[in-house]
Image (cartoon, rainbow, N blue to C red; front, side, top):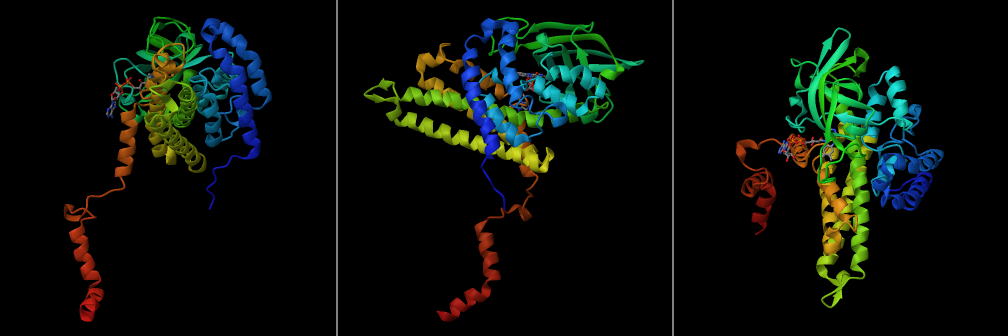
Amino acid sequence: MSWDFSTDPDFQGQLDWMDEFVRHEIWPLEAIWHELGLDGLREAMAPLQQQVKARGLWATHLPPELGGQGMGQVRLGLMHEILGSSPIAPLAFGNAAPDSGNSEILALAGTPEQKDRWLHPLLAGDLRSAFSMTEPHTPGSDPTQLQTRAIRDGEDWVIDGHKWFSSNGSIADFLIVMAVTDLQARPSQRASMFIVPRDTPGVEILRDVPTMEHPWEQFGSYGGHSEILYHGVRIPGESLLGAEGDGFVLAQQRLGPGRIHHCMRWLGVARRAFDMMCERATYRHVHGSLLAEKQTVQNWIADSAAEMQAARLMTLHAAWVMDTQGARAALLDIALIKFYGAKVLHDVVDRALQLHGSLGYSTDLPLEQMYRFARAARIYDGPDEVHRQTVARRILRGYQPPADEIPTEHLPTRREEARERFAHLLGALTAND
Ligand SMILES: Cc1cc2nc3c(=O)[nH]c(=O)nc-3n(C[C@H](O)[C@H](O)[C@H](O)COP(=O)(O)OP(=O)(O)OC[C@H]3O[C@@H](n4cnc5c(N)ncnc54)[C@H](O)[C@@H]3O)c2cc1C
């Protein structure tokens, strides 16, 4: 019997250090990081990254032989909860998306040469990467319909296709591109992944798609979502990542832990919004009392606390299943947290924003930015509906139609069966009457 909700003291010491560090060294940068631009941000981050490295907390998502700590998903989850409190904190810890997920793929499937050329500089922060799978004209939620093709030509591969929402594509040094390599194969084995340097002839970055996150047209900034044309992009045979047809398997391996980290980061965001909501309730006086004394507000605070606790325990449980039984065993738990965590994030931020009224809606507070961020969480890494479908399908596998379609719990049927089975007791009762 080993249910245990405690964190070992040494690791708790690391978490406490991270919490202080993120609050005192990184939060202050948030207010000016857009002004700093990419180079300024990099300069501001360099000394912070040194401190993180000295503390042994750099790129902890990777195995020890690659400079990570091999610490498992529960510990990583607890770290991501702290990192999620700031959109730029992951940069200081060498695990910002999409570089973190891409480094996991390279660690998992890269050849020694690919690791030397792409993974090590990526980890050192000397290169940036993007993951290029989603296409404007096929549904990202059903990647078996991908149209981007990679065709062998002698020793090379030639890629043709149209992608979008390749996050950080416009500032990336290389892209990991998912393309169909065998149209005749089973749907789950049709696609493969390729490493494509961004300056390869034929890679045309059309734009960073304006979104709710940044509604104005801009190009080449951190966090942009690029639309990219690949016209006859010729790359050498050794650009294939993993085996031919492994694209979906690798994508799944990248997404499982990634979803746990997302959910824990969302809790970091939700916690910050929650703290703002509680603080506001303590001093805003309306219609004869403080907001803190209104029952609706008390309900929001209590509901938010309960929902965040539920999401946190569900997410840590998913991480624990992954650590103890492997990624496959955690599929249901991960699908559960992906849509539930996104909803909790959305609802807590929404309540906090509402409680601040016009101030919450304004850009004088980070709540409107958190709200836009929360909306995207319901779409990327699989929309809510797909995860709900996964959960429901897996749960339903454990059920069968009852005999004659009479519900198992049908009381008249059960009563009849019980009368038959316990006839001797009923008989004794009648005899005693
Ligand atoms: C902020 C952000 C960052 C992203 N970054 C990247 C990236 O770096 N690289 C990359 O390749 N992609 C990225 N994406 C794309 C993302 O992965 C896709 O948007 C997502 O997979 C959904 O695909 P789609 O947009 O084509 O929507 P579709 O697949 O067309 O789905 C649209 C809607 O249809 C509904 N739907 C879908 N399936 C079902 C179902 N089975 N049952 C019921 N309803 C359903 C859902 O409501 C869904 O939202 C990013 C997206 C966002 C928003």
